[in-house]
Amino acid sequence: MSAIQRIALVLTIIGAINWGLIGFFQFDLVASIFGGQGSTLSRIIYGLVGIAGLVNLGLLFKPNEAMEREPEVRPTR
Image (cartoon, rainbow, N blue to C red):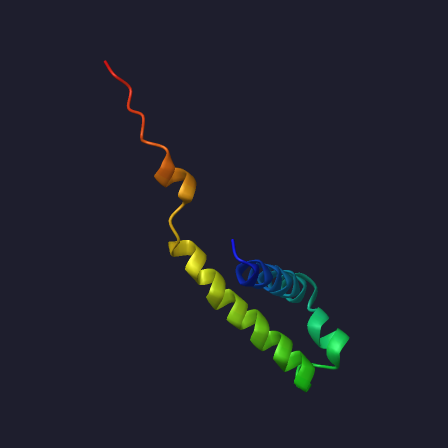
């Protein structure tokens, strides 16, 4: 996993935690830290989390290297 993918994964996790807080407690952590949903800094954070989600979308289609290396073992009768 590259450094960009790791950063994207961390940002995606932050976004997931924030959405969990919004869903369960109606509390937007990003907005409360950075001055409301409309503030420039909050909008930048939301944008970065969105881009990180798109970067992580590529992980869904990346082949699993461990699966490619090991041959499939089939039982014999």
